[in-house]
Amino acid sequence: MKKCPKCKKEVTAKAKFCSNCGEELKTEKKSEKKTNEPKKEKKTKKGKDFFNRVGDNIEKILETEDTSSDYKDEEIESYRGLAMLSYLGPFALIPYFKGKEHKYAYYHAVQGMNLLLVWVFYTIAAIMFYQIKVKESCTYVLGRKVGSCVSTTPWWIRFPFGVIGFMLFILSIIGIIYALWGKAKKLPLIDKVNIIK
Image 1 (cartoon, helix red, strand yellow):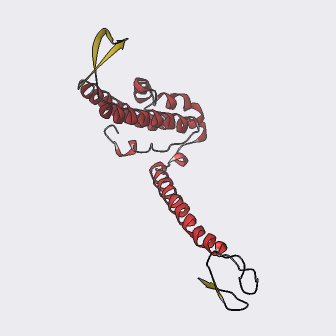
Image 2: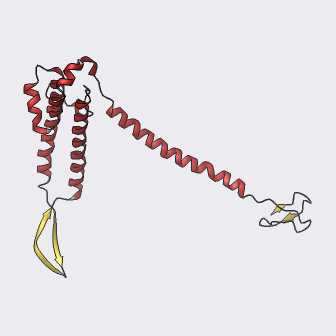
Image 3: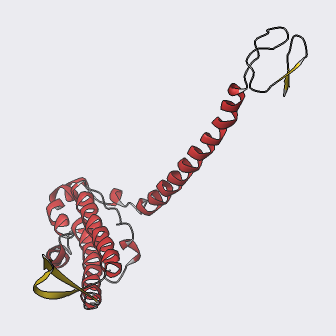
């Protein structure tokens, strides 16, 4: 129940007009909308906060030591191609052994060799874990088995290795970009691996 603002007689909550004086009664939909809006804002704020935190963490990972100013422009220009080879798997051996007298190429060669070692450890671990085969997948056509059944590695082993392999591939691309842009910047995550110096 609510009261009419003009004659103060009680009317039903859903009434649009006063039954006594005919005064138009205001509905409270506007106030309901106002109370709903802050809730939506809170949800979007939480979403924004989450993405901001993720963005900040990615930025921290990508923010590594940059020593580009230690190298002369002529040296960077001359040895960009050799530095780029450092991130192409086994080709990292070429700048590592050939580029020792060229500081810029050798800087990238050391990073490339550490990345290559991580690739080797990853490959060995993947081969070992992919030997775990627990599922048999068979092909059926019209209820009959066609061919032989094949044991496969479960998805919960393949998925993390796929993610790690993709990340290593991205790190190789980042290294190539750094080398071509003339940046002597440490690779994210690989800067923690200092096996080869």
